[in-house]
Length: 282
Image 1 (cartoon, one colour):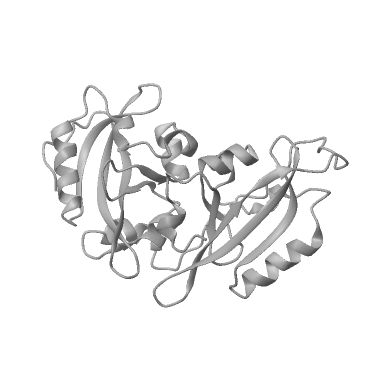
Image 2 (tube, helix red, strand yellow):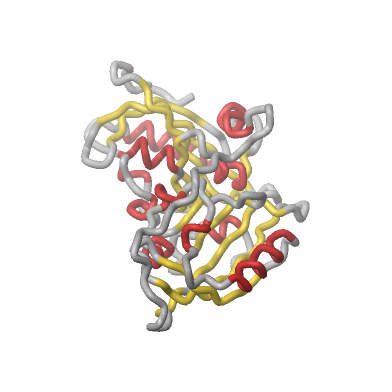
């Protein structure tokens, strides 16, 4: 059973996982490669939506009610339920949902682990592609929570739960140990860089490097973050397909609620192509 948010983001796991926000309407914040393989949906298609698009005519009411009841009570739940793939094929889903809590016992996220098996032959395929629910943006308080992550990262510790919930800035998370595998990228990062979550899971940020990328500057950034220091620089990087772009990258260590180093976060902001790469790290 998944016990922590960091464990749920493990890029080396072959479990089919989806991570949702810990409060209604429980929007999707992360899906992994195995989840895409089972359902047919890419992360960028479902980010900030609810999981209702997996339901269809043969989806049973009783397990849905059990899921709703347990989630409202903050309890784990295991059910068998008929769900549908993007292509409309029904499958028998052995679904386990566990609440993920912070150091104070408050629920920050829910992690769903799916296991799909062939559905009974008498369950017909949908004659249309399942309809995605409306896009639901995460709501933050008047202090501007997501922007505060970037502004405060040099002054205070960034928590993994907040980093994952940032749906405004282009964010990529990696493991905090070599080779620094990518564990999560959000929708703005996918739109900026041209890659899907499924393409980059388990790879490293070197996929963005190219002929004009200052490798010495990258090494300085990594040296700073490994010391627990946030740093930033302007770099030349490359999008999928080799398109050159200049971005201000802010690299920050990310901690759990017990102040243990969990991951590294890079926040990218694309700048005008006329701006030359910065010669130093700040």
